[in-house]
Length: 309
Image 1 (cartoon, rainbow, N blue to C red):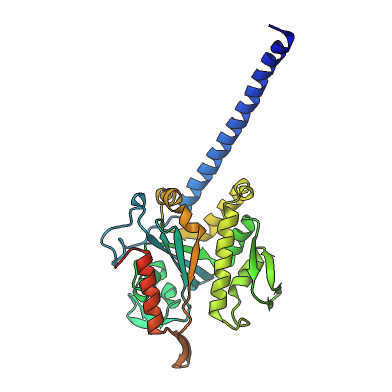
Image 2: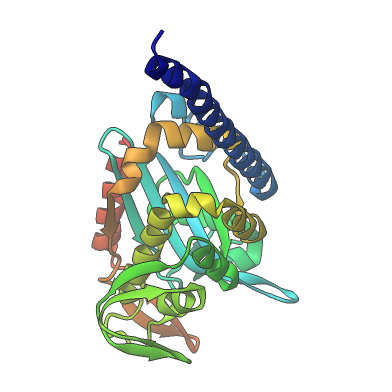
């Protein structure tokens, strides 16, 4: 064996050793993330006192890649008060079409509050009966099953945005809110900025509908940044933000199935709009009255996306 061959032979154990240490480090890091994720999901999981939706005969089977729906409730929680759902977004996810449809429900929408026996603003359902009443009232309004729910504390939503390192959005107009100024064009938002950005509606000529677009931008930004390598390196902050401020009835196993079978659908979000209604005062209170034809159209599109008749 030549001297050169002997040198090469001596180098290989070191190289193999370094690769082995790196692989071990990656493996340990992966276990840490996995444990952190499972602990976080256990902490945010909350059962809801109801079986499957009354609008379904059987529960959604994720392993069969069946379309499903999610209600996202952004709740303003106040001390001594149950709070109100300031933001209500319904997502329908179809893995075959690889699309997600998203519709924001105006919070002042006048509709039946299921389980209360009254008609009132839709955002009062949470104050009257929490998550369950919100789900069932929105099911009744949209005439589709609401399979899962995610409740987010809006005041603390900023922690989630900060945890992913902020988000970049394309702002449609110059505006100010409190101490925050937003220039038209591409802007990068930290947590406090993002909260102000999604809450503004009075200066927007499109009112609640402009706010719906901003909500969609921030949601997409969080999803995009949350999947980045830098966010994976900052997983502890992300998990802490989620565990403190998010609740859902989706289990860890269900989340794994969604990640495995539905992730392509998250890449294409199609926004539906509720905008043809009108404001009306009744007994001195302002309500949003939906346009029946528009509501029927939105209902039909969501049903079709869920594969329902």
